[in-house]
Amino acid sequence: MNKAYRIVSNEEWDSQIDEKNLTATKEQQQVMNVRDCDVLVSAAAGSGKTWVLVQRMMKRIKEEKMNVNEFLMVTFTKAAASEMRERIGKEIQKALEKEPENEHLMKQMSLVHKAQ
Image (cartoon, rainbow, N blue to C red):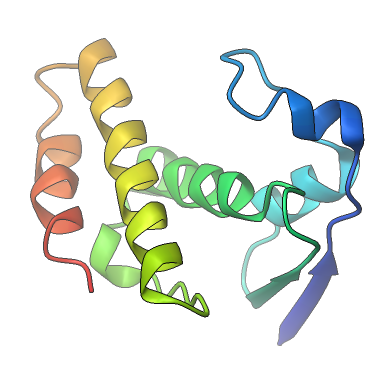
């Protein structure tokens, strides 16, 4: 079963994208929480697509012990793919700072560097 989600841009949310205490919109939360299906996220530039996908991935890595190499995330450009890989790496690093002995997170850090 496939699901498609459209994230509606929220200017106030867009301006806070780099804030530490960012709260997801209802649509973004749906994307992060849906399970047992493929997800297509379609939205305008600056609406938080990358952030949402990275948060979705991190939630599954932490809660379901999934590995980075079990995800397929497609972007339209190599630059966008590079940015996503960098953001995933930063999120894994943040998680490792909170749990430095977490072997699963250590493994993810090595896997993210192999992502293409």
